Image 1 (cartoon, rainbow, N blue to C red):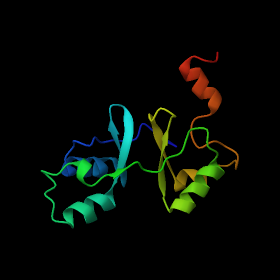
Image 2: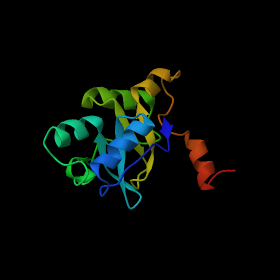
Image 3: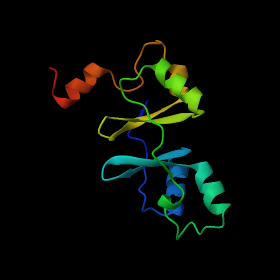
Image 4: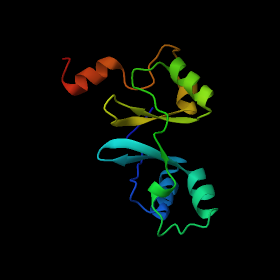
Length: 137
């Protein structure tokens, strides 16, 4: 899983989001508002839905073309569960979110391919999550 991925906001311009994608070499940006995941923006969205649709990338915002309520997975989901969801939804990248909607990271097919253990969780190990929160010592 990629932790702390590059993100954008609904109010950002399409040009600034596209520049962020290019600088981070990513084809998908989670869209965050008030600390919560509210959508995703893909390179295809920027290209096909904005530039291809004649929208001015300096005036249009991410909100105009983002995909609201994207499919997600949880840190405790197994690699098998995430892979099954990706196949079912035909998605190559899924945001990993906590129950409260906070973004933990992104998991992609390369992460799935690199997983050595079929039962391994897609996100942080539950024990590690507990330690980070101060729930375990």
